Image: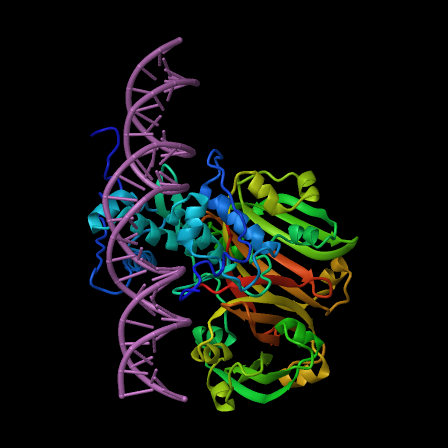
Length: 257
Length: 257
DNA sequence: GAGGTCACATTGTCCGGACATTGCCGGGCA
DNA sequence: TGCCCGGCAATGTCCGGACAATGTGACCTC
């Protein structure tokens, strides 16, 4: 054969992708979804080359920028790696879901544990110094306050206290017992964008121990989180306490290049 | 005036950007850095519009795709928000450094605390089941093992135990006392790409208490982390214990759109 | 046989344009 | 006065091409 097989990667049964130009879904998005699915179910093996962009574009009847846009989105997700002069290949390891702004409710549900919630408090109050600073509002301003106990398998897992700016949305206690706070906020049209978190640990006080069915002095995991929407407004400040014996944070994170 | 002022945003003293075409630095990167700097130091006020892409491209003598690439990189960082039909604006809040694959050494140094390290162990051993699973190698395979105590202001902050695949790089004890593990790995040409972390809490054992100068039973923050390079290979597995009274994790994270 | 050199394949960067989609605002109409 | 509609401005998508930078492998030379 010649200097190098031009179809070195395509030789091994190239996967057939296709795009629907009549669909309102952007072409690059159609392609990236098909690529992601192929990676997810193993049809594109880890470490395998993707075949060069130009040929792929030609096969699909797309332009190279469109194909690049599709590939780039998966590179950003950490599923693909580009190597100049080499090609684009699937990362070797099993990359699980990358880091997301996780909700305890969704985490528990995904883990197969049916989460339950008991609302302890659902009212309004005035912001103290800490809450005001976190939400970027004036001290003494009105805020919504929600306190909940979260259970999994009938046992308490965490005590959640959240402050929200007044007027952002009205929280029904019945809804709060049914689902997570983030889902309610999203349903109200709030686009969550970023969050600032601090995770620490401390010993349980007597009150906390009673609430969470732990002895006084037991280690607890604490998290404070301020969540922002896409305009940068703070939309929620949470101060949560987890039973360390029942819960740990797990997440995947990518290095920003 | 007309239906709408075409220079509504440019009217308020448009910031002058400039690019150097003779520089080897990509044009879109030059622009994105200047934009980021302008946002960082407040010359581009939060909430202000950026002015339309076409006009900006014209002023700089760039094409629109190049300008879009620059803007997109800042949108990905969470500094800008695009609104179709409206324009691109700076997010309102003070977005601090986004989430990075943080190194305790760098964290402490950035906080102005001079970190110090005492190497307790720097040897090789065989992988037990946990380490083998984390690194994706065979049980019993040879691995490097490093145990360190990290100090800040002369007080112990954390006990760090790391396992690395054999042959990845040779760690000098003297180097480990001088800087952080990640810096050494990067200096050895390893491109860190992603990591899987689990953060929990537990009570200190008697041994741990002695090492970290905490009473037995004191709450400790624990973290296990497996780090991968850009090909997906696991390059490090860390099992760390922090004094909860002296350290907490802080990070910012973005919602994946 | 060992080493360096060169061509090639592939991604990286950049251009100029075209049309579609969306949100806002003003003006027209009832 | 109030509602609806059209126009406009801005981003979103897509095209086709051009040249640069880089890593690999094969070839050639010594």
